[in-house]
Image (cartoon, rainbow, N blue to C red):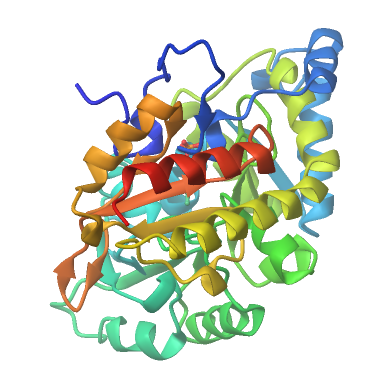
Length: 373
Ligand SMILES: *Cc1c(COP(=O)(O)O)cnc(C)c1O
């Protein structure tokens, strides 16, 4: 079995075995908790969170709500569970959910929108993963009794598989306002919303204020070992707590995890700019390698998705051969289309706090050596 799986959820640990630390660019999920997080975890004050008695979880939820300018927040074990809960609360079985074709909720969440919420996706292919109201409007189901109705619009910011692209805030504001005018709620899969905020130079509260629900991850670029949050109104979050329990997400002394989450939330966003600069550096280097297609100007956050189709190697093969250099990058093709045809030979590099500039230079050098010039 290929040790470098095609998506971040299924990736196995790297074992290149040359005695050198691997340069792991598969995902920012591989980040390990900082020493400060470890200390906070060891010392965390805890209680039973299912009884609402874990003081550290309560603090994390209050801080997240405050930072996002919302009434309430809920700590959940994963981003998938956060999205699943929000989607459940905002839809009815038998409805359609409008999202971009590369959306995580559609491709990497085990079809939970169908399994748990009883909905089907209505997909749109959008340049750089960025939807506009004009495109969405065309897919809103007409109010005819024999057509499944549009229950929700779900946006992803940053858009993971589109290369970490960022929504201009005017666009998301417009989509939310226009959908709301038709009575359609809008969810934000903001797994990397702090990356978007850093790229835009705007607070997360400002760029997410019009969404009905927001999910974001503590466990990616922010470095926490486990956990995501859902933020929204008090009534939404009260109901989210019920759905979390239904999914088996009631975690008891979860303050151990929330302690790391608090540090992720307070201290880690400022480090993301460096990840973004490293991703841009990687993209610029990759663009100069023959057979690799990538527009570095489009790399604004920490994700580089490049087409390696013209290198003479399939993405999976290049990924496998990079292992010889202790470089890990995932092959991610197949979730998007170009002119209606599935994109296949795509390789993704994700920068994060455990990979510095020197490591990016070494990764680039490895790709250069493997590709003919
Ligand atoms: C990682 C990710 C999630 C959530 O993933 P989990 O592994 O379930 O925490 C959701 N959306 C996007 C865009 C992601 O990249």
